[in-house]
Length: 386
Image (tube, rainbow, N blue to C red):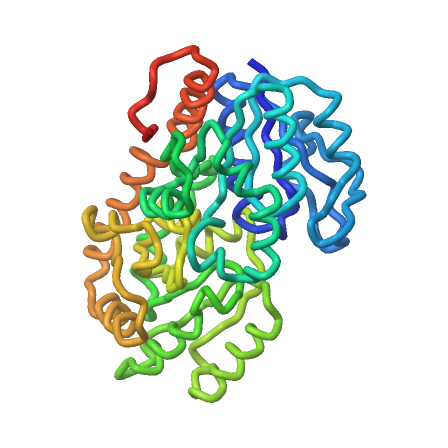
């Protein structure tokens, strides 16, 4: 079975789509299921292609033109190479449409992973650009797909609302955890035990939809803001970052709010492990890899109702609530007053959840089952809905 995945951008700055795509394919190789990934080289000198130069990453010279990123290199590769199944990541780019189109032309099955791009809020952003693309090609690409892969039930519901009626596979993003994680997690109890401050954090792309300002407003509502420290990790929209910095100054929080910029690799996990709680106050998140990453090092998480993380409540490893400043302040105060052992117990529950449900080998095996089912090599798995 020869499978090709495609993605318009595969640089580290491309965000979570590139990261979870890399993690999934690497996990599939680890279970003995090889496949190729087609993309373009990065152009930004500050960016770097994901991975370590693996030969399964087919990164072509970047000849993309127009905001749609038409690429003759992509077109020729798809025309001249043969695969049994095609799987594209994302929407609205030429790479995505060309993958669907060539699969239909060659009478091969194809999958689309929209990565949250069919959520109503996501569709509304720059809708004037997306509407003609939907009418010209993407509605056909979506409706004729043999399967759409989503990461949670809310995303499946939005895909159905868009009008898609074929098979949908619900497979979470993999928690492809590094080997050094046990060492980092083991140091967490001693760190929390000797630190009188409660450290709260945000990690992700700085963008208005992330609602990071609500964390500032939450800290400002605490009776004693000196009891905590808020660490904001990430880069993105420069104007939005300046807004956050000016709000920090206006609220008089310069002494307890720190902007740490982009973090990655081991440093990212070490920073997460040192938090008493990670906050995800976004308007919406399709899955949110940062949630599993934080849970994997024993850090409880507060996530907004715009994320698919009800398990934080049901498992008891965090809070899944509306992300108003009042609610955020309430969670922060609860963490400040919580005994260390109780906080660590919540973290352990989160670690167990990640290992049982979101580990990379388990997710990779589900994707393998999906591919085999589409090619008629096995019966329908229970995570597929028709």
